[in-house]
Structures are given as C-alpha cells and as structure tokens.
Image (tube, rainbow, N blue to C red; front, side, top):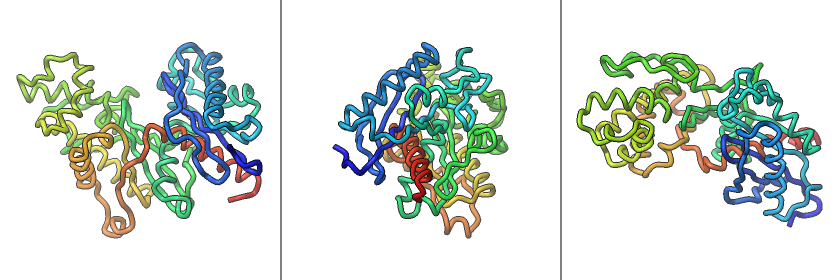
Length: 346
C-alpha cells in the first residue's frame, strides 16, 4: 500500500495489440516489476481503444492496491507519427492506420475519459526517456544527453537533452529512422537501393529494421547464397529467423547484420555531429539476442561510428535496458516530471 502522504502516476504504453501499464510513485519508485498487459483494441476504433486504456489503468491500480484518488497524472504513448499534443497524423500512424484514427486527438480523449491530466509522447520517445533515466540514474539524468535507436519492425529513436525529450515543433523530432544515410560502401556492388515504407530511399529504417530484412536485405543476399535453406521459407517467416541464424554464425545472416550495424553506426555518426550526446543507446531484437552475437553486433556498431577523439573520451555506446517495459515506464517518468513541475519541485 502507498503511504498516505504520497501520490502516483500511471504510465500507459498503447500499441497495435496490447497496452502495457506501470505505476510510478512520487519518490520515483516503480510499483509494478513485471509486464502488466491488456488488449489495446485499436483495431476496433478510437472509442473502444480509449475504454481499453481506462480499463488498463483500473487493472494496474488493482495490482498495486492503490486507490484512484492517489493518481495525479497519466503518461500515454502511442506509435508515431503523431503530434506533440497527441493528435494522430492526418495520414494515419503505425497500427493506427484506419480512417477514424486520422487526426484523432488520443491524448485529449483519454484525459476527458479519465478526468486526469494526460502527458503524451510517441512510443519511441517514451522508450528513449526511460533508457536515458535508467542509464544515468536520478543524480545525473537531468544533466546528461542521449540518443536512442531501437531496432524492431521499424526503427524508432529519441533524443533526450538534460533529461527532457526533444519533441520539435510538430512533435516529430527524433524520427531517426527516416534520416537519409550515405550508402557508398554500405550496399554491396549491384545491391538495389532499399526503400522505406515511408517512401524514402536509403533512410536508416530501410536498412536497420525487420521490415528491411524482409523487403530488401534477405531477398538480395539469398541471391548471393544460392541453395540457402532460408530460401525454402516464405520471406516473412524467413526474415524473422535471420537473427537465429546470425547467433549461429551463418555467413548470410552476418552479411545482413553487418549492413545493419554499419547503418546504425552511420546514424550515430550523424548524431555525433548534430547533438553530440553523452551516450548512444541501442535497443531492439539484436540486443535481446544471445550474448556472443549481441557483443559482436555492438562491436560492429562501434566500429562504424566515427567520433572525434574528444567525443570518444566524453561519450559511450550502451544497450537499452528492459525494452518491453520501456514505453510504459518512460511515459510514467514524463507524467511524474509534469506533476513535480506543476507543484514547483525539480
């Protein structure tokens, strides 16, 4: 139970199929140690999804035995593109592509439903915020900067400066996956230029993502390794198996992950000349892989990240912790910061 003189915030991470929730108290302690998941219902439309978020809040409070009256604010994140105010892009967003979601103000709708302040971030920014605070700890988080890259179905990212997410004028800053990369020396001779789902040719996500493996990397490298057993699988299935082959040292898989590591290294190099952060944080499936493969991949990223001598002394490349819970926890951190600011603390 919570002390009577303390309050909490709730973090809600809403995705295409599930909501993950957490509770953070006024002292900065997480009161939920495991995943607290429930269906997001986003495919059933905004009204049903908002009810699902409200239900998730009730459920996670039930897990902790905390009353609704102790909640001061709610942190919410959804996949982008979405504005800083929580309005889904007019063209739709990842997992929120149905027409009724376009231009929908998800933050305001949840705030009205709950009768509580709702603080919004996109999911990558929320995860980046948690990664930043977890890496530096409470003493240094507000004095340090970071750039996070999270490789999944797409490539998410976030930029944190002095403990605060950089959102930008429209809330779409930190979309690192859609930064164009130089492809000279990255693509093999004759390898076609990859194109991102956003339409850009040769951006970071077009190389460093599961979608990139399925759409372009694996189809190309299968032509260079005739007779490879992955060729017998449907491409969508084979793409998901590439990491397992990489963990076993398969030459085809290592070619793919070498290209992905090079792309991330070039992305970090751009960040070095743009934000010059204290730490470059890397998360996603490759981080959750077997330790030997993970270390090999991280070493390749470091090899392809070009830092000046002064930057190399002042910064590091590290892994994003607790990725499955990062969105909800980052949303809770943002909500707690908003409450502390409102009462003149911090």
